[in-house]
Length: 295
Ligand SMILES: [Mg+2]
Image (cartoon, protein in one colour):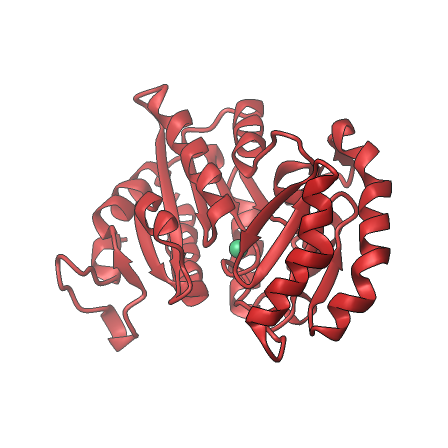
């Protein structure tokens, strides 16, 4: 497989074979080099994917998100072919598994607070447990007021997600989130994080997607690791695979940024490869599957 012939690049200006829309926007050389490292060693390759905005297109509300059938088929194939397939999400791990639905994969939830292993064991960071009652209390107190402002609350047990993409007045919804949820949470010592049209209340624990990625990489014998993501918290996944690869010249890493008009600049800056949103991610999964099959 000549990967470089399969996609276009802003610098190279190559045409996409078959006349498809351009899916790789930047970094095709980096992607080709990574695919070269996968070739002949798929069992020593680890694939990490964020869920929302990466393998499932951004949806109006979290409940409406789905993984497209073609993407799922490729992921199932990669699940058989690669050494590790892990989904690394801000959702809780059980919900992430329900959404993605790939058996045998590892699901990291809560940005690293939870891990659902391939054999179905759910482990959560014990440091987060004391915050569960506080989260429940905050949800109960803010639910009516935020509902009136069109904010959708997501109960992730150790985390609260407040989504305002579909609010009639997003600016007013954000103000309501600050007054009713984020302000009181901050005053109680909890952490506040923002993403695409959402605000999260998190326990004040230093944990990240990148920490979970690094732990999983250290548990196996891998020589290639790819992390695909679209939002700020995914940058810790990017740096985890980069840091891991930098420790050994025989390792290869690739950070794939799923780009939309909403992509924060920091995500663009830290991605080795830019792809056009979830179709671009699916395209990269297809290239990976080809390399794995060529083994
Ligand atoms: Mg995402």
